[in-house]
Image 1 (cartoon, one colour):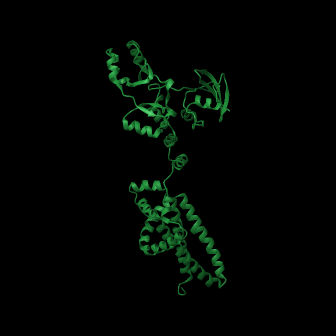
Image 2: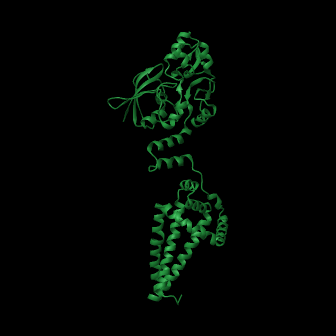
Image 3: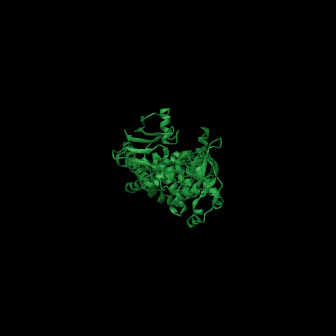
Length: 418
């Protein structure tokens, strides 16, 4: 060192500070990479992403290499800085060198590169991967020895390094990620993804058409009445039964008989032959499971039954899909079209048979859905009795006033925000 000039030592010191900044920024950039975006790019053949992915697959070796390099250059920089200070200021220069070098490394080799790496991880990590990959091969024996020693120390504290691998995201964590992603997702796509994640919490009874609202075809009636019911039906699929819905025969797809109906050649036998066997869904079935069952069985509609086998309602494939994409159908399917009308004074007139999930989705409300499935059920649950008049109550941020009663149920509700 005595034969090397002070100017040369200064140049070496500057180079070591740059190397220290490289190692610091590389570590932060690689750790800050979005693992799922990295995997996507690597799967598409992005060379830098592939190198970064390989490095991150062995995080202990990567961190060992970076810390080894960082500590080497920092210690060497401290030694050279002390030598320069002694030449220029004498023995007292050691203290000056320590203070100045600490500030320089802290700002230029730690804080600045790490802040840049956090804000732009791919810009730092991808180029660094081209340097760190061959450097890891070169320093592999040293890094392995360091890792083995460090792991042995960790085991003394009953810590197993391999257990710190990347964990799978839970549904709630994934929901938080989707909720916070505003730049790359449109609001519609974001909401659809959130609806898919929330679908697991829904049950078929949350979206089914209640039994009392099901429109079906009673084939015990005279043929003229049957023909009139088919001709005037607004729905493409009709439950077919004898006298009572509990005596369900099956489902009739009106399109299978529409040609003969239009030509006036439709007979009772044609109707019976076109009826498909009924499909029953146990109450409490998750919407995600039922969606897969509809796909597996190639069905679009089923009857929801309770533990005693009694029919409680009807669910269609459209009902479940609307939980994901929102309302997209009109009256051309089984059930009734739930009406939510905005009044001139800003209040809402709502059919109380509407499902709470649909109401929350349509009006962006936050009504509780862990109990009752419909607005009628929620109000009755809150009142704990059947009201006798126009009772008003507050639920959350809305005030609900009963506007119409009938058959021991609430029919219409007037709602205004408080």
